[in-house]
Amino acid sequence: MDAASIQAMIETGLPGAKASVQGDDGVHFEAEVVAEQFKGKLPLARHRLVYATLGDLMGGAIHALALKTLTPDEAAARG
Image (tube, rainbow, N blue to C red; front, side):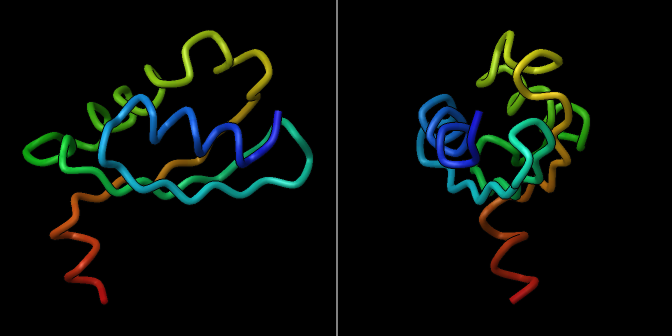
């Protein structure tokens, strides 16, 4: 598994989302995802939306995924 594939899966699964994924060992990754779909949702619900885009890869090909999830407004506010 590679970061570019994970990024593509997240962005396909959450239309309009922008994802930045990093990870060099092929099993541990970090991602920042900015999506309008996160508006009004608590962090756990946001993470579940992202995990749903990756399906069975979570816990399998992707051993760990550290997430930072933001709405577009939250991303703009942090500068």
